[in-house]
Structure formats: C-alpha cells, structure tokens
Image (cartoon, rainbow, N blue to C red; front, side):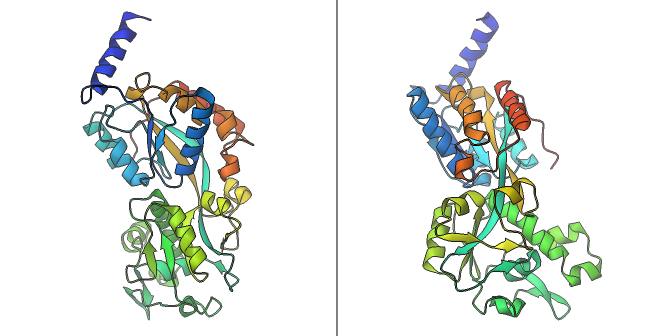
Length: 346
C-alpha cells in the first residue's frame, strides 16, 4: 500500500473515531420503506456468506433517510441510504454542508407504486388517475370553481365506483412513495381534469395546486411501516392502501392490486412501463466510510451482486423488477469504482 493510501485511510479512521472510543462493527443502513426489504435481504445474505454481523437496517422513509445520511461523516452517521426516488438538490446540498461530499448513487431496480385492497373486498375495483385525484387530493373542481374536496364516497366521484366511504392508507410526506404518488398519480390525474385542460393551466400551476393530499379524513397517513397498512387493509375490506409493489407481492395471498387506467401492477407491466406508476429505486453510499467501517465494502458488493439484483436473484423473489444484465454490470462497475455522483439539477 502506498504512503498516500495509508495517510488517507488514517485520516478517515481518525474522523470516524473522533466521537467514540471504539469503531462501529456493523454497517448501518437507513432510508425508504420500499427499499427496506431489499436492504434487509442483502444484509441477511451478507451475514450468512461472511459470518460478519448483519448490517442494521432502519426504515426511516426516503426523506428521513437522506436527513440521517447527510448528517455527517463518522461512526455516528449512516453508511448507506435507500431511496424510492433520486436525491434532490436540497438534500445533496445538506450533505455537502455536513462534509458528506463523496457519494455514489446506485440504481438497484424498478418498482410499481401500487394501490391495493383486501382480497375480501366485495367490489370489483378499477380506477383511473383522474378518479384517484378526485378522491384523495385536497382541492378539486366543484361547479366550475377550485374548492376543498367535498367527496365522501367513491360513488360521489363516479356512479360506477363502490358506494362506500373513501378511505385510503398511505405514506407520510417524508416518504419517497408519497413523493412518487404526488408526481405520478396526483399531477397526472389533475392534468386530465376538464377544468385544468380547458382552463389552459400549465405544469407549474398543477404542481402548485395539485400536490396536497386531503386532510379531512379519507386519506390517513400510516407512517413508514408498510406492514401496518397491510394489517389495516386486512381489517377493513373497503379500504385501499398505497405502497410499493414489493409489499403487494409479499402479501399476494391477502391483497390484490387495483388496475390503474386498465393496467394491473405486476413485474412485466412495471418492467416495460406500461403500468403508468412505475419508478426507479436507488441506494446511496457514503464513500468516506469505505475501508473504515468493517464489512461495508463486502456488503455493497453483495447488494449489487448478480445473485441479489440479477434475473432470478433473491431480490426478484421479493418483488423487485430487476435491471437488464448490461445495466446491472454498469451499476456494479459504478459501485466498485466508487464513482462520485454529480449534483442533482433540482
């Protein structure tokens, strides 16, 4: 090893050890509840293969994960964070302010943002993005005016929909799933409204006026624990839930996905993006912790391995829509080379 590498490693170790007497012996992962089961699976396989302690994996939500991840360098701070959307410019800047200036971004696969219901439901569910917007948005057009949402039942929106109270359990504002829902469902549904199309309102107007979830009861924030949403759907066959496809996949015996605009969520429709609510999933690596936190490099290698993220791998068995072989090879190289991400545009 060169003197330069020894010096850099020593400095990194000094920085990581500044706040505690002993170095942490477990990798720490935070972030998205959607990415959580994939991080957990990689942690289990890493521990089984190496005999090293399994990484500690916390479900904090995408926004919460970035806040923790960007808190600083050192053993008191997380090594990786999972995300169900790309890092925002403001989050990148928060990282930089706290000395986290060398980050690698890794695309791990694709996910469908699912709206699901209990298999015990008495209704034959199918929704459009426009109907979903009218059910769950804070403000909607009423008699030619933009007003607070008055709809209480699904049948108030369309007589063909169930004559039951609107009740949807979904993620909080800190969740990347919430961000994706707003962007991919609320915004698109709002744009289809005759009020918006005929009024000539642009995308900026839509973003400013169609991004808020209603807070009068029909939409319930269920926290970052998607398993809690599953339990609530089991208890109430009239309720719907919003979460990543992996949770629908894992609970297929209890839940069924609702077709959106005539397309049901499954691995094929997510992979070819015919399901209109598909999105990429990521994790982010704090490169200053490589070679310092025991097991971090080995865990990263396990996470992006063919056995994990490849076609037929154990992540696909958990509902991940996997990357093509060529794309996975590209991701593996990006991670192995610790390629530094560029600042996001927004």
